[in-house]
Length: 284
Length: 284
View 1: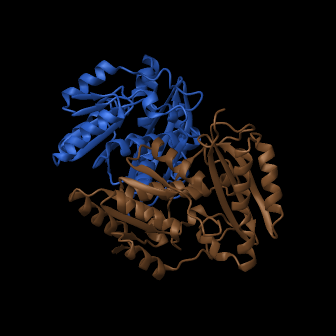
View 2: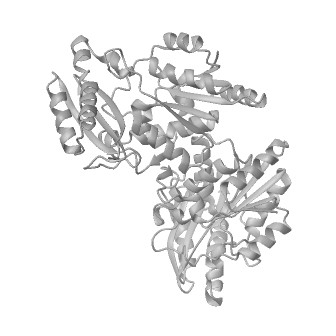
View 3: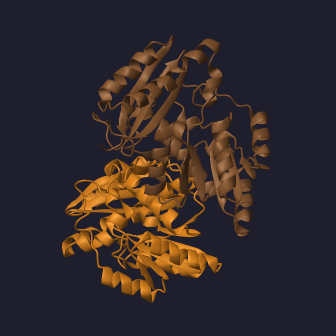
């Protein structure tokens, strides 16, 4: 596996692969890799000829009070995992390689980025869009892979890629969960044993929501109430948001219909966790 | 000359040229072409193998009270000029091809775009950066050509291309002037005979500024005063701004030193005109 710390090195290696007619798959990450990330890498390995992963803890997508400094950075372990998966190139830049001291250009998605995590974390999706646009321009992949746990991020990036005419296919992969149901996240590492137990409330709430929908409930308010009750019955769990939205437009729906997103963000102890479920409501 | 109205058609033709090993030169315009534009096309013809021009009156860079509707659109004449110059492809999209109904992603340069025209025309440079980023992604040129009359635009686009890692060289070409000194602009067509005469005040003010600097004046305030007096001695000329700035950082300088930009915007009748001069101040 090539490890490239500079943009120039990355471009040279990717262009060499392109000249050989290889298709380029790209998996952008912030490192602290788990099976969710690895599912993206495996799909990229299956579908494309030259797989690039990036590890960059992107300062621009963290807010002032957030966990930029303490975000886990187990580089040695990540590298071993990526080598094992057969990744061809790891782009591992320092912050100065990505953001010049006088950096001043941002990519803003102004619609899909507004609700949900965008409301709780102002500026977050600007940071995401900006770094992803940069990475797309550096790597010029044929296909880029994103996980469905960050459903809103996925929709925002799809929109950004469409709006700015990036020639890249955005491929989504399903949420990967721990055996007990907790959605995999690098931030799960922050949880102590008790918090880890209480963190199950997100998955439990989503499964109960699914059960209610399967039983015929269509009122979003009713489902949200149920989910709130479940989350708040867990110790040290504070609700950031629980929302039911049209899965494409990310606008709230009162009555569930078509493809809906049920999404929640919960702070367990000091750790903010997100999870979601997309349901196709059957027409009667 | 290929005339492509769709993104797909443009991409196909450009990619075919690339496959033949041709370098791509790109001249983005809003049409109503004059010798300033043609100087860009000629330079592109000289330096690259396959020259793409675009004509798109970009709604996103016009403010609410501005001249989007009346902006001149002499397509037949423009087409003839571009054919004569040997342009290989003209990209001439409709607004719907560039902006989907639910378009929501913008590129924002937040530093160099703030003073000068950015202060007078809020949102203007967001519109410029957004459409240029899109055009760069559609055409993927090796080199793109911009005129120095829009000096701030040039700096903003250079910064945008650097910050977002576009693989494109930005080439600037000098201001082209009418025989009497008026900087060429598509908006000169708005001027009636009397306004056309008074529009000379921009060039005269710049030449007098140059003379003062050559004579040893270094106080920006003194030069600006001189320029104001000249402009206001012309009928129906209203000053939007007259500024002296560091030519790289676009921050005002009190004492001229190094490379400075002398820039002004003047409304003559109802037509807003801009002009500028970059001077390298000699070290004593």
